[in-house]
Image (cartoon, helix red, strand yellow):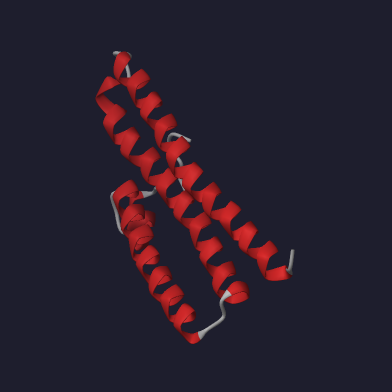
Length: 124
């Protein structure tokens, strides 16, 4: 096995890990939501917790997938076209991550300090 084959295999493992994070994490969050809904005391806030936790799972999975894309582009296929495609993928994922962060927190990142919620992780 040559170096590029080894790196390609590692990239596939990283991509599979990113997909597994999103699938298993999504299922875990869904189970937690069903348990929350079943409890009378937490029913009122269960949907907002579901959205926050699911958004965090998606963000983590996307970050892992970006690592795989970067490694593949830099080591396996370092052409101008692949770098341009990587750039577009990273920009799209940054916009998606940013919008998910806003959706999770309910505020723009630069306004968090005004609400006194900088760095809080209410339901980790």
